[in-house]
Amino acid sequence: MNRIQNSLALCTDNEQKTWLAAACRAALAAGSLIRERYGQPHTITLKGAIDLVTETDVASEAAIVASLTADTPAIPIMTEETKASHGTTAQRLWIVDPLDGTTNFAHGFPFFAVSIALLDRGKPMVGVVYAPLLDELFHAVRGCGARLNDKAISVTAANRLVEALVATGFPYQVEETLSTVMRQMQAVLPKVRDIRRAGAAALDLAYVACGRLDGFYEMNLQPWDTAAGWLLVQEAGGMTTTFAGAPFSPFSSDILASNAVLHPQLLELIR
Image (cartoon, rainbow, N blue to C red; front, side):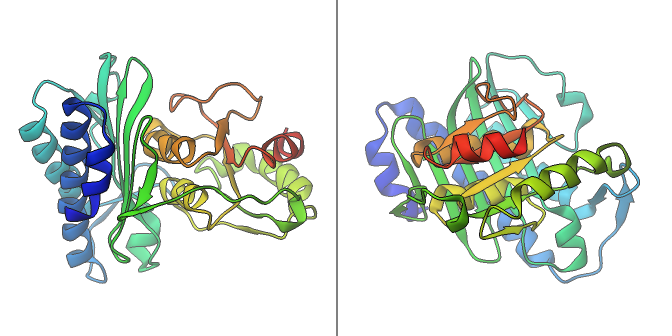
């Protein structure tokens, strides 16, 4: 936890410090569990034709809920795997993805993360994305900047599409969205340096925040996919909107994240 000391020092009130410490503690605990189980046989069930859940998703979620409940008992928690939590409408709310990139994890592809965010009346207050295999803890507090472990991060300064490395993702409803996905790919790919599709939206957004990617776009996402990464990008100096150019919310179904210069150019292409 010593990697967040500078961030705690920048927090403007004790509530922010409590929230950040709680989110990081929960993410690190879940990440340790995930790391121990990586490469082991998994029990896999299906939520959809290609939408997986493993026993590790469930165990990670239980660890996060227990940790957050102990640290912030008054704040309700929306989690990916507990459907009963999906209708939560509290003004202050934790939003949790216990294992973003489950398909990667199940196949031994090392690109996945834990994602935890706190919303207060719809505004992101804390965002944490933890990549356990690389031991990279991305974290942000509203108004206090974004960090990777204990170093400040920022989005890139790329100003031309041909310089941009852009990431995307493919919806689980592939038969319903294939034509749109391909139209967007045909519009974006010839204009940028290259496109990556690694399969974990929270980590893609963290990579935009730290400058490893210049942009990211995806449709048909859920709040737990984007809530933490949304704040990371904002606090790293980037922009987030819907595909229509409207202000983003994690309850929006699509997102475009990039730096301020590339954003309108990418928006024109994916529209």
